Amino acid sequence: MNAPRTRVVRRPVHGVLLLDKPLGLSSNNALQKCKWLLRAEKAGHTGTLDPLATGVLPLCFGAATKFSQLQLEADKTYEAVARLGIRTSTGDAEGEVIERREVAPLTPQRLAEVARQFTGAMRQVPPMHSALKKDGRALYEYARDGVEVERTPRDITIHALKLAEVPASRSLDAIEIVAKVSKGTYIRTLGEDIGEALGCGAHLTALRRTATGHFDVSQCVTLEVFEAMTEAQRLACLQPVQSLLPDHAAVTLDADNAGRFLSGLRRRGGWPDQEFVAVFGPPAGNAAAPAALLGTAHVKAGELIPGRLLSPPEIQQILETP
Image 1 (tube, rainbow, N blue to C red):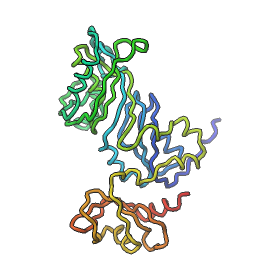
Image 2: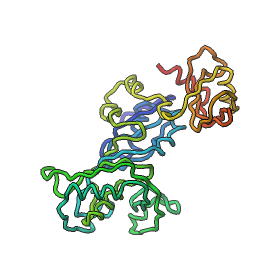
Image 3: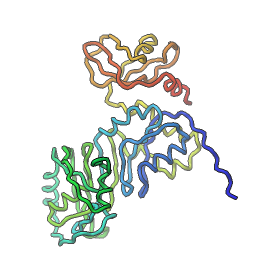
Image 4: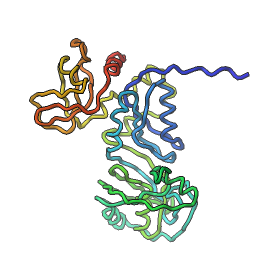
């Protein structure tokens, strides 16, 4: 007989885990593994990475999930390798080969010229093999059925782009791509477009996200290392909830005003107009408690107007976390 499965007792966990997602694992599977390891009640990620991609994947737990949208909006930096002369059905190594072409000799000057061509604001058509939805179905579901649907081009920005030829000792006819891009940019599509600009076509063979917003891969922990940690070490890996708010101006309220703010009431003060504000203060009715994140707000005409708020239990749980 099989031994009965041990039931995991969930608990409130608040913070951000910067995971270096491994190859071959979906973002949701990575999230569920880390949620189980932390025994967290509530969790969410900040935008998916393909299973064939690795790198920075911020995972939000508890109160941090209220601000995960901010990371969805953040710029991202990627490193990729594109194999030239071969196009695939998916734009990456997972798809079937659909075309082969000769690759003309590359020069640094030619690569720099193409990089300039793809730098700046532009429109990009999302690939069929993506999770975007059309009439309630993901585009990749249509692609699996052999159906091509019309996609609306997206406005994107390539903030910086570097292209370099991969040394022949490592791979034949391949280039390295380093790109800092706006939200909604598909690097597979960018790689294919660069291949077309070089006159030979291309597909990605490797993709790694090295930064999202102000989070960098050097801050990340691998899943293998995270699994080997003790429970206390795992909790110590979490960034505080306010790490999601680096560009927010800080406003600290006293206990009385903090309680009113958490009730959704506007507060008046001498603050300058600010679109993004992180509000701190002690929990309602506890003036002796240390200041903690209460939520976000914006300031207009001297009024602090509440945005996303933490609940009093969430604030108390954060304060009680060792």
